Image 1: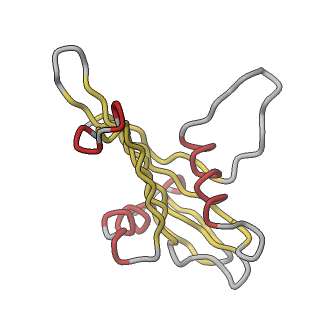
Image 2: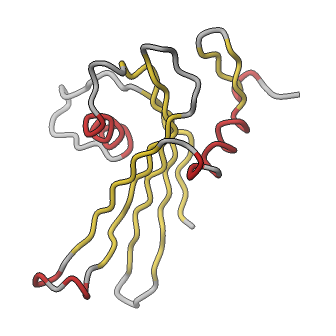
Length: 137
């Protein structure tokens, strides 16, 4: 039996965490946005290094007027010894109004949740979603 914490109700439909994880693993089958951040040293495209990427997929649970999204942020790092690591953060973004919020704004909302920039103690804005997991692989 699934615990109460592993369930989410969206507009009367219950979704289990495993359903959302399945949708993340098949993210290529849905409508999605992908943004890549690369460091291009000295303007040399052949030396480009991927710093991170974010994938935002419509999870199909929204309404005619709002959308819900599964989000995966990957940050790629390399230490002084040359060892590489990937830090993965997953989240859900809920109730985005389809007719008001443009695709690049959905990217902004996702980055605000997953990689916020906090300047002052008073800069608390309402979050549009919640982080599901953070781990280094």
